[in-house]
Amino acid sequence: MTRSRTVILPSVLLSLGAVAGATPAAGDTMRESPASVSVPKAPASGRHVDSVVAAIERSAHPLRSTDPQGSLRDLNSLGRMVDDAKVVGLGEATHGSRDFFRMKHRVFRYLVEEKGFRSFSLELAWSSGVRLDEYVLEGKGDLRDIAREEFQGAYRIWNNADYLGLIEWMREYNREHPDDPVRFMGNDMGYAGPELYARVTGHVAREHPRLLERVTELYRGLAPTTDAGTFGEEYVRLPLAERKERAQRTREVYELLRRQRLAAGTDGRDHLWMVQHARAIHQMAGGMSFDFDDEAQIAQMMKRRDQVMAENVAWWHRHTGDRVLVSAHNTHVSYQSFDTRYPKTQGAFLRDASGKDYVSIGFSFHQGAFKAFGTEDNVIRTYRVGAAKPGSNEHTLDKARQDDYILDLRTAPRPARAWLDTARVTWNIGAGWPDPVEYRTALGQAHDVLIHLNDVEATTYLGSS
Image (cartoon, rainbow, N blue to C red; front, top):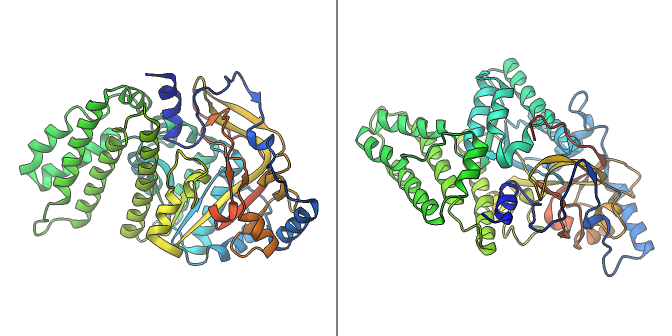
């Protein structure tokens, strides 16, 4: 396997950032990204910037805190912006900053308590979400053990104190509201755990025994027998032809189940979920059947991945009836991609499916720290970036007198609206760092709402590396 495959693939399955040929990193370091050193070719005049800042100040709603505990009154403005949306995408400008994760906890708590939301969806494997859902609903298992076993490979950055705090809050909420619980779902395709295969074959044995021999044969040798991280590393080393053949087998199981007519007395809901489990298994195998040595194929895989995440969220909303908060990188929840490697985003697919029932909320920040994979060695460490420089989105956003605030990009005054609709250099830090790519986005075209934070700190990582 080439260095680009060993480094890019784990991070690209999460989000932006790992790029072959990037400068090596060592230890906890301080670096500036292109967003902090690049200036647009035609910067706006000082007078124009002042009018933009004044417009932002007039329409910005200040945030009291990112702490998920305590009063949520300052989020009432966000509630009005969300209105009656059924699905809300909530991004993050890095994959490893404490303040983004805590703010997500805070927003989810508000949406649960004030707007009737009942599901939290994360860019995490479907099978991992099933285990976490059983934990928050029933207390099944130990959260630290589940996190250690499921947050591996590309997903190990989720093994942090802030996300575990959110999941524990969900479990506590369900202890107090057993008849109206909140739920957890993973919407991603990067892994399918052995229990998912067991659930599908067990269902076939009970309800469709004549198919058991065929399904058993099709699934033979596919269920993971190692930890999730090792499984992913070994899977991408398989020959392309073998990965394609595995995808053909998982597709056949999914199609077999999907076409089955239910016998009288059969639990239709159980069958519905088993078909979705088989679909999730195939989503993983299908996603891994692209040629990772071909950049065009990687782009197509990423488009398919965002489509899968959107389809799984839509399926969950349709069949549970829950209003859903979707947590992902800014790039995924947005309407427009910041990167050619992402031809179409989850947010764009959700808008296609849901229209105004989907609302996209992005995050921005002025300076701070984050955890990320080293793009040369895949080791998680802390990085820090200095203040965004003139010409970037964040430099102007941070000129407002409010340090932290919420801004409805759809209703901002005209001077701000015109500014928001123009693409500029922006912080867009994904799973890997350092990243030599300069990202540009028009915030008003990417999201409906923006949460701006002046300073962010790195999350507390609980994994081993």
